[in-house]
Image (cartoon, rainbow, N blue to C red):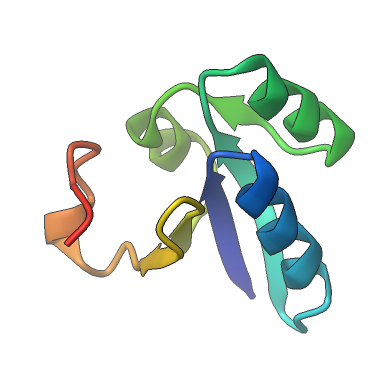
Length: 89
């Protein structure tokens, strides 16, 4: 099972979430976001919402992230991107 944390649950995050529902062995297990929309979507989708990637990784079993704004997947097997200050290439 691929457990995904969405970073941001805005327009693209919602599109990604809907697409992940259609992918076998794939599930969104958390949202990382600071806004009310992020918290509302987390509640709607029955997943926890965290204010930082670090909090998320310490709390839920995640093996992939999706930065909604850049469509960039980050595997937790890439230690250089475990830092919440990791930026887009």
